[in-house]
Image 1 (spheres, helix red, strand yellow):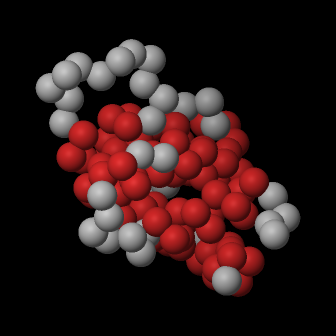
Image 2 (tube, one colour):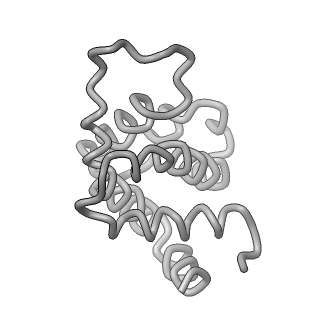
Length: 123
């Protein structure tokens, strides 16, 4: 259905951004998908920083609070090299729709034409 993995990931994030009120288990896969989408987008927009997500993100002119929220969400829930502590707060997953909306807003802010074309591709 999609021309690339990037198109597919964008479509999942778009759907997830409208998923307010779901059970936490519904949100568990979104951090990894969001990380892959953001890494792909930034690798294109900021290729010299493509090996460091936080550095690449910091080169983007976008709301600092939202960038912090996105990176915190990704680091807390995606690609951990350790098993979470029993007291680790997974309730951050409840923020998934809001963070995904922030991620889409970042893409739209950085490259509005790209964002509009992506919406057409996943409609």
